[in-house]
Amino acid sequence: MRQYELGFSSANAAGSPKALTALVMEPEVIGPGTGALLCSHGWGNNRFWDAERMRWALGEHDLVCVAVEFRQSGYDANPVTGHGWDCPYDFSFYQLFDVLNGLREVLRLRPGINRERLFHYGGSQGGHLALLSAVAAPRTFTAVYASCPGTRVDEAIETWAGREFLPYERAFRDAAGHAERIACPVFLDHGTADAEVSRLRHTVPLEARLRELGKPVTAIYYEGGDHQLRPVSTRLAAFQAMAPRFLQSGARSGPPDWETGSTVKVPCGEKTLVIDWSEPAASPRLFRWREG
Image (cartoon, rainbow, N blue to C red):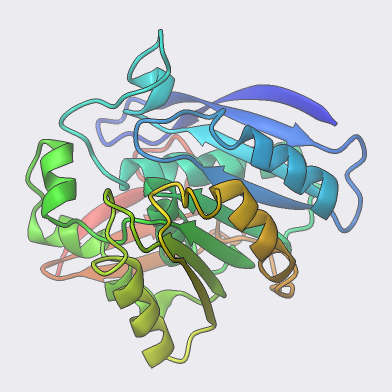
């Protein structure tokens, strides 16, 4: 196994690229079946949060594993401790492009990775990012897995973020509201005793919407589990139990969105988010808001 850190730049609305760091673990040999797993950490955590999961997935399922330290969180927010977040906090818009651009950079450097085995796992806010990645890059992922995810902006999240969200901002961050745009299998888990992110306000409505639309979804609820699924399990143990279904859920066809240069339009009420994947990762033209 090789482990290293990768510096790259992600888009910034002001046109000044945001410097970020990704943790990468990869097998000694990248063969024709080697895929990639993007692991997105939660609010306030850092790129090392999923290191144990990454090592396990690499060894058991032939994957290059990537964890991006997204902006406003972890060492980006607190260079000493690597924990905490900035306020006001963006909550999953710029962070979404950060994690996708990190995967994009690894795929650029490793052309031998099998483009039909691309997965995204995240816990808490990372789960939100995994879900939204299937909306913003709908032809990219084989499957996404969200553990104890926030799925929209509710009163608690707005309080933690220290800012108000405009209607179109709320609309983009509502995973259930975009469920019809998700084209890959979705895997979910949540603890029934989670006091930080309520399954009843987040995961349960999303699961119901996906089932209503006939989308492939697997959901497991850990009775008595908290935000880390303790004491009945852990997020790592839950991931390992779900992995045979999640990581063997069938190959998708074709290259990811940024390799085909696709344009993705996401209606968000009075505005539409337009993502131009033909633009470089650091380009200020990667995305824009259009009226109507």
